[in-house]
Length: 403
Image 1 (cartoon, rainbow, N blue to C red):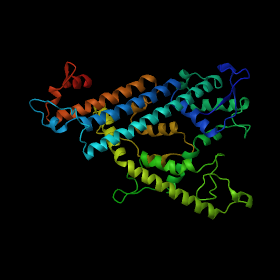
Image 2 (image 1 turned 30 degrees about the horizontal axis):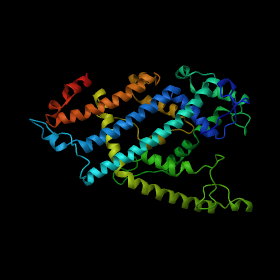
Image 3 (image 1 turned 45 degrees about the vertical axis):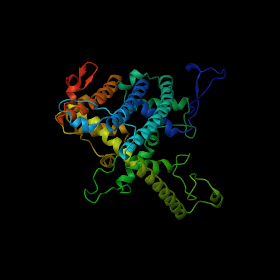
Image 4 (image 1 turned 60 degrees about the vertical axis):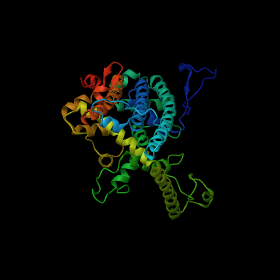
């Protein structure tokens, strides 16, 4: 884990005895400072990650239960008596489709465990940010929703004069901090605007929406995450295999541009092929998860926003086209939300606090369950009336949740 401060001479770890050291990766550190500000403090970060883990676990288990343990032919044909709607021996004599569901459960369970490990690292980083905000910036978590980002930048500039977060430069200005936070995003904006990441389909054309979050993540991993060296400069690809910018050619003067382009293209091609194979292997399981997650999520939205037929938002490709250089995410989101109605703009002024995080998690889970129950009722099946949870019929839970 990153070491952002040096311990005191007596070995104590108390907050008052910590002496902050220069940061090794200033880009990453500035990004964490900004992310901590956007998420409104330590407990909002923790609760948001915990509810995400709960929602993910619920989606995995609930979808596996629906696909594997529910006897859907019996549910559809349930008109008089409804017995044996749950398959007790579902794991015996698995069909091909059931094997896919079992693999789906195993793969996403591993992904959930990986997310738990990631949460531990986020927890550690958030605790360090909490100490930094409270001790060096003199900002408490309950003050963050009332502060503008430029006020945080002003305090960071003053901290550099005493703490020396960066040894390369004596003075950090707001533009330099913003450049570090937006370094990769600025490259992404440029590549989209210049047509490097131009995505077209033969039927829908360029703006088809296929530039989704999954494709964007793959492009970030293959291109942006591998193009910078430890000095935050674009790597000089001196050979088609190694990732570093130093090599045996350094002693012979500056590298040849044509050699770098050729080697960089070979490394990028190899990376694209590997990720293409990985995506192809996991595509069926990801597709199952994304479809189920979309349905469960928007059941609740259709219930709470019955005037709309579904979510309306900018596509990922359009968002990158509209974004300006060095435009931080929260400024960009603020500009996009200006296109919706005044009522929505009014609601967006309120802080993203703990109660809202909890409410969204409860709304997602309850909306998902109600959506499945409503589908059962629309099929004409009497299972909703004849199946009891405790001493209550399923129809009681439907009306209770809708109310």
